[in-house]
Picture 1 (cartoon, one colour):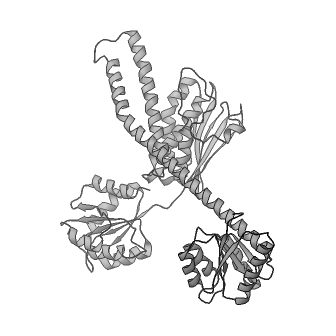
Picture 2: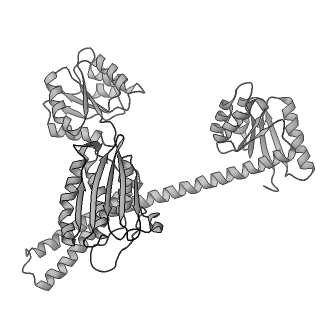
Length: 499
């Protein structure tokens, strides 16, 4: 930029201010303190944007008060059209606060017209250009890094999927030989096969963890939420790990809140979080130690914990504890070898439930992992059907999944309720009083307030696909025919509720 001509676009309607800018730039060029500057001027925003579209500029000097645009709208329109060109706002004494806001929204700098000098002007231009170049370079680098990260996650996911089948075949083959299906097995063969099976199981865990972490990082992990009692999760974890704890001489305690504590959550993923934390606790707690699992019911969330009296974690290691492939306190030799992904997966699953996870620990003083699970409202399903027995049957067998229900008996009322109440899902009969199901779908899909609400059609009659396509050509709406299979309808509802 030292020896290059700087192409400047000045959008300013005040002729005195235009002359001032021209004079200041000319003086800096004559004094040798500036490279050559090519100045293009425009008195209106429309004219300035047209000029910017005709040729590239290195920087735009922009007055916010123009005949055809005022205030921040001037900056926003310019920034939207010329997002890659650095903008410097020229402000008067009465609009300095607007100039500051423009800087917050993406302008590189602002200059007060009453205080600007040639030195300040050319310095602001140079700095704006360099900052913008740095920004664009950083954005490009970040885009490349995100793409590399996406490719890495995609590779891990693909490889993990491809490994699952041969691993399953190996596992079954070794198991059959151990069971004597292929003939008598000697003690030495049995020992070797048992070691092989243990390592196949370890490989299975690794593949499963790689799949999970790749889904989490790619944002493709989906939660199958239903009504979950955290007490039942704790009881299952306690029952599962009690034999392992006893075998190692560890005391396992479970502290359960009084009464049920319901969450709208993915039960399998909650089990996985506790599994990862408790298995680590057993691994790093010595004989005669104690592990405690528990939960506390709070107003906005549930606070869960897994505590142990084990070897503890140093402050240095705590900073990278939830990073992938990090392992601490591992002893080489026989025994369980982790993947180094368990805590990273636990963190991802907790955050997917809108919670957070952290650790409190010190060397030789044990460790407590804390995590929160946010209480979110149970979703509401609107059933639109004029046949009361049908609505009661649907309500009855879906209620155990934790959904709330409202019912409409005709199409007109349904449209109004959906617009007012925004249910999470609509189960819609097609033959209704007042308005047909087709018209209901058409009105919902052409209203920005309701167009993204999922719909399931239930009908005793065949659905006219052509007519359905006329009212909604973009959505794939599932159809369940009456009399419907309860399990099939439940699975469709759960699939459409997946987050």
